[in-house]
Amino acid sequence: MTLIILDAGHGPDTPGKRTPDGKLREYHFNAAVATLVSEILTKEGLTIKYTHAATRDVPLSERTASANRMKADAFVSIHANAFGTGWHSAQGIETYIYPQASKSSAVLASTVQKALIFACQRPDRGVKKANFAVLRDTNMPAILVECGFMSNQTEAALLQSKTYQRQCARAIAFGILCWEYER
Image: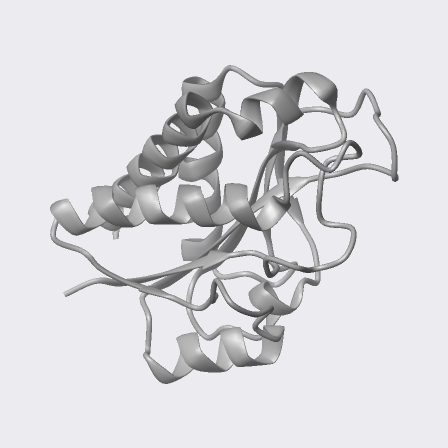
C-alpha cells in the first residue's frame, strides 16, 4: 500500500508566516489543503500520514526523521508563498525539488505543478530546485508546493477561500495519483 506523507508547512504560530494584514496565517491554509488532499487520497486507497501538528511548530528535522522512519513512498509539503513584508505584485504557483532529486521526485513535481496550474489558473512559476531541509533530508521522492503568494492581495484572497483551497487540494491529489500510476 502506498504511503504518502503530507506536511502542512510551518506551525500555527510561526512568526511572519501570514498575510501583511494578518487575516491569514500560512499554516491555516496549509493544514486545510493537507486535510482535503488526505480525504481524496484515502478514498483512492492510499495511506496518508502527517508530519505537522496543530498545537506546535514541528522542527524540520523531526518532520523528515518521521517520514524516513515510516518509509514513506512520497513526501509532499504544502505552503503559501510570500515576497517581502508588505503587499507585492509577485504571484503564481511553483513546486520545488532538491537539486540532486531523483527522477521520481521530478516526475511528482511536474505532475503536481501541471495539475495546480490547470486547476487554479494562476501564473506558472515552474518546477524549481532548492536546498530545503524537507527535500534534502527525506529518503523518498519529495516536493514542496507553493500554492500562491500571501503577499499578493489577489492571491491572499484566494488562499483564504474554501473554493480555492479545494481546487489546490484536488490538483495536488490528482498530481500524486498520476505519479502513483506512472511508477
